[in-house]
Amino acid sequence: MATVVAFHAHPDDEVILTGGTLARAAATGHRVVVVTATDGRVWNEDRSRLGELHSSARILGIHRVECLGYADSGYGPEFYRDPPGRIRFARADPGEVAQRLSQILRDEDAHLLLSYQRNGGYGHRDHVQVHYVGKRAAELARTPRVLEVTMPRELLLWTGRLARLLRLPAPYDPDVARTAYAPRATITHRVGVFRFAGQKRDA
Image (tube, rainbow, N blue to C red; front, top):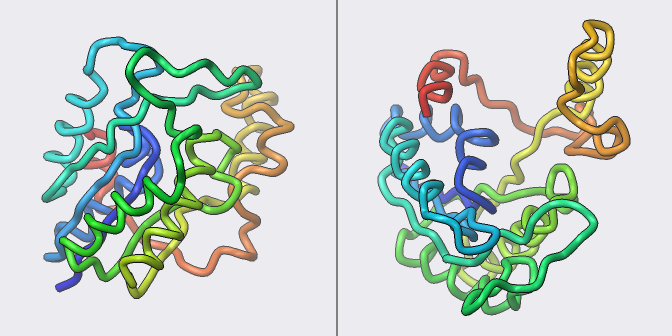
């Protein structure tokens, strides 16, 4: 059986982007590890999101959870200053973070790293940083395979059009959706997770 390490920016990304895939991998006997770069706190709020991460991991069957402890960098034009005593993930030295992640990959003898594509999906600065850190960490650890998590851009555009037709709030800014994630024709792998939709929802 293989060991899969999923590297995510924030608690909750593990469910949104890979919940079904991780549940399927765990159910079929693979070892599944989740590493988040941040603890989900923009400032110094309570640590409830970390608790939610561990709860979701139990539901999905994840075997190990690690948090690198950086502060959430926030989304939008304003890049906040660092909170006291902490550094925002997007400001962290990518080489240093990659060293930390590569040690986990080595410890786990990981066969596969799940990371993000170069645009971070929808441009969130922490998600973009995940791409570069994950790529470098896999090189350092000599992890044999890296797959970048994505979804069809056309799906976002379609849901946006449907929302407008039904006079519902659009799930994404149309300008963001036009360049988000990846065109369907460029996606090389698809994972069937229908049987694990309930676990993903519960997580």
